[in-house]
Structure formats: structure tokens, C-alpha cells
Image (cartoon, rainbow, N blue to C red):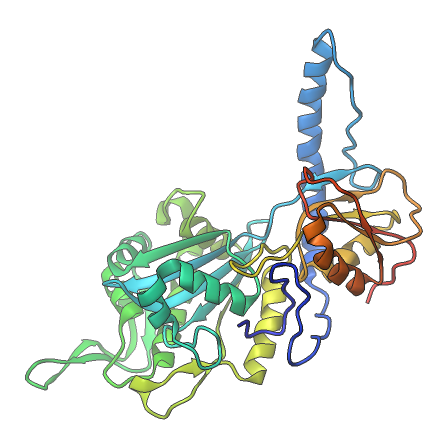
Amino acid sequence: MSTVDHVTLDEYEEPNPPNGRRPAPKANPFFRFVFPVVIIASGLAVFLLWREGTKAVLDSTDGTVLEIVTDPGQPGYEVFVDPTPTMLLVHLDDGELVGLTVFAATLLDNGGHAVLVGADVASDGIDGPTFAQRWRTGGMDAVERDLGAMFGFGFVETDAIETPELAQLLSLSEPFPINLLDPLVEVNEDGRTMVFLRAGGQQLDGDAGAELYRWRNPSEFEANRTERQLDLWKSWLAMVGSAADPLSVTLPHDFGLSPFLRAFAAGRADLQILPVVPDSGEAEAAVYSLDDRGREWLADMSDRMVPLRISPIGFPIPTLRLLDGTGDPAVRDSALEALADLSEIRVLGNTAEFGAVATVVTHHRAEAAAAASVIAKELGAQVVFSDEPDQPVDLTVVIGTDWEAP
């Protein structure tokens, strides 16, 4: 069960949320600032492909030269778009879950959002098993499914990192300045308390930083550990950002955690803790859940994190081609924002000619009829069926001059 008030289409059946329809989110800065740059960059890429393709056709003795539109403002322009880069990072210690981090980077590789989720948070956000329990019984698939339902989007990448691996990564940019509010302690077999790290400001190496990340004091609330994890993330990103060569303090990969570290260190990183509340007064037995305020916070955060989403596992949303038939970029951007929660947008562009009067939702497969109805209801549009099973998307939406932005 999803714990946020977002719209999904489970097997393309119209949802019926118990709390009614969620109000439209506030305008996302992505659609005003980032998206136009993405379109221009995509147009340049299309132009380069067009130039090489046209040369190959002209050099041949047969075939037909097709006109490829490379100007995003012209009729007939279309481009495939990539989803917002997202990653689920599972933090483990000796196989046990000690925390989750959800990343979403901007498409310009200069920052993004991250949300930390504690191991003792209910995986359905209410009163179900905790994520730690779900990890033990179902592994990555179970955690990814539940967290995707909670956040309302899927993850382009998933990865798990054990304490020794984390220590190796941290050692590339050590030492880390940390200010501990409480000491990290353990009780030995004799019942004596031993101090691992003292309270106060100090510099940590990679090994100590990884130990801090997994550490939980006896009878300590999980929320305290999550706060320390957040402090370590902030310190780590600051060290990566201050390095003369970010590649030297991260692994030189274009996948996994390293590119997110570099992107977040280079731009504005918004790091948050999922706002949950304990349902018990006893630290060792407490399970954390989302109250109404927490669900509202997460719904808004999810919209800001992922302007272009992919389907969460087990909660499919239709794939969509969005075409502007008006010639007004502002209308196109408003339509994109209105449909971002309801669909996985794969193609953006313009109709062959501007001046389309009616807004139309076309489904290309019979099984996508229910999804088309949901999208059409959101837009106030008409539904059309065109039997084209080879289409790369489930639906094509044409925005006409009759459509009014919400």
C-alpha cells in the first residue's frame, strides 16, 4: 500500500485513494529552468545524429532522404528523454540493514535531493514490518518495491554497500570533521561501558566514519543514528566538493554511488531525513511511521526530487509521448508538469503542424484503455484508440488550444 497521496496505475486501473485527490503540486523549478536546457541539448544531439545519418544516405545510391527536425520550436520535432537519475542505496553491516538513502540528481549533473530512511521505519509507512525486517525476508526486491510505493517513483539504479566498502570509499577523502552530540559507546561482557568515539568535534578517518554510520548505542532510538548518518553525508560531500579533482576522491565510475557523490558535491545538495514518528516509547521496540504531516511532506518532496519518473516496481504507470499542438512552449511545459505524476514520459515533441484545436489521448494497445481514461480525465481530453502495438509507448497525448493549465 502506498503511503503518499500520489496517483499510480496498478495494472492500468484507475486508483481510488482514500483521502481524495491530492492538490496539484507547486510549479517545479525543473520545468522552468532545467527542462529548456535539456531540450536544447537534446536538439544538438539529434542534429549531430542527423548530420551523420544524412551523409550516409547521400553517399548511398538508393534510399530516400527524410527531413529530420532539429529545432525544438518547430513542428515535427520529437526527442526521447531520459528519466531523472535516481538511486536506492542500501547500507548494510554484516548483512543487516542499518539505513537507506534515496538519491535523485538533476539532469544537468549539478546537485539534487537525497532522503535518508531509517532501518526501523515501517515499510508501508503505517504499521507494517520495518525495512530491516523486509530486507531479512525479501532482500533488495522487497525493499525496492516498498520504498518505490512509498515515494511514488522507481529507481534507475539500486546498490548495497557494506561497512568495509563504505570505509574504503570514505578513506579516499578523509579526514571528516564531525561534531558528535553524544559519545558512541558499547557495553562489554563485564557490563562495563567502553567509549568508541567521544562526544564533541573531531576528525574521523574512513574506518571510524564507516563505524559511525552503522553504530547504534544500547537502548538508543533509531532516529539518533539516522541524524549521525545525515551529518556524515554532509561532511563527506563537503570534502568531495573541496577536492581539487573530484575523481581522485571518488571511484572513477559513471554508475553507482560515485557519480551521485560528484554531482551532489558540485551543486546544491538538499539532504533530508524522512520525517517519521515512533509508535512506542521504548527505543528498542519502536517502529517509525508517517503521520499526515509526514505523508504530505513526502508527496511534495517526491515531486521535487523526480520531475521525470519511472514506474515503481509493482505499480506500473503508462509510458507516454507528449506532443505540443499549440506552438507555445509554456503550454508544453505546463502539460509536462501536469502529467509527470501520472505517467512515464519517454518522448517529447511537437505535432506535425501547430494549431491543433482538441486535446487528444490516443492509446496504442487495447490494454492501455484504462490508463488513457485516467490521463484524459486529468486533461479534460477525448480518448482515441489506434491499434499500433509496435509503438514504443502506451499513449500519445496531443495538447490542443482547448487545454487550460491547472
